[in-house]
Length: 417
Image 1 (cartoon, helix red, strand yellow):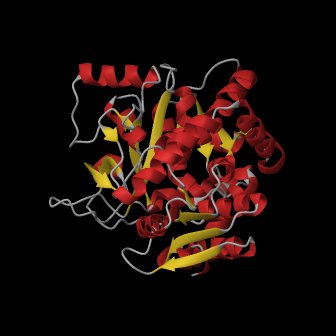
Image 2: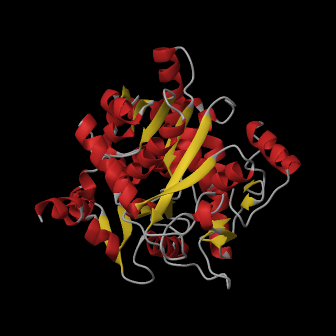
């Protein structure tokens, strides 16, 4: 557990009971002590409208039927659950991949983007704004908006645009306007700031399609509900294939959307260990990583109270990770709750560890994972050493094609030299 956040065993039990009982988020949008809505007054009506629309439409039979139809025939759900025989033999555990890399646009992000775009259309939005780090949410948003005939503007940090150039091209080909963000840290945090500024300027005609389980209420809940299909499918598929539940499930954690989607269905299963793996970057010091749950302190960032990478004066620090999609100084409030309640374990993997795991997976399984996913892969490898023969599912959150410019500068450059 994070050294700076301590809860008694009784407090942990109460938080977990409330989570299991469906009491979180509460009416204030809180997951225990985390979450909430910390935004300018100009955004309150838009958030209230979003929450009302979400509660009216999200779980209605006609909305779910439309979403399910699109997920099945356009996105390609259900995604496969694939056994990884050679990696299992090498690492000493039985490893299965939940293949979100096989979903349309190449990652889990399309589940949320499509669901929110459908909701936006029902609410009468005239335009969509989105943010992106690794580019996968931007691509998913561009694709969903093209599918539904909605204008799409994507804000992306200038640094991320350089290291994720293939995804910038994909967004533009699908008709999205990609706006470079040159202020702040020029990565995901700055992109979210710009998207929020855009939304403030037209909170009723614009729909902000937030890409991760962060931000003000109701976004952490909305994104969780749209991504929970990952874990529901994986749980059912594993039971059908093996007649039992896995011993553990793993996912990478940045803001935390693929992870909360994977974990949610397994949280009630006490026999299943749940592990999230953050970006350890270059080291443990502030500014050397993007591991908010491992090293963060409670605070408010972009509308939400959660664990953040900040200094003693409360100043949010720049992060460092080879993975653009994990390069964020905060984390979703439900993850902070699950850690504080003792239900989910969070750890980190360094850049070098992620690159090594990516190489092994590519060579042994013929699957090039995203750099984000590679962090969770290292977590599985580390866990397997102390759990020989155990069974584990990893959320293969995305494919690594988008990371080729980075891999060309690192792994492939080293081989060439």
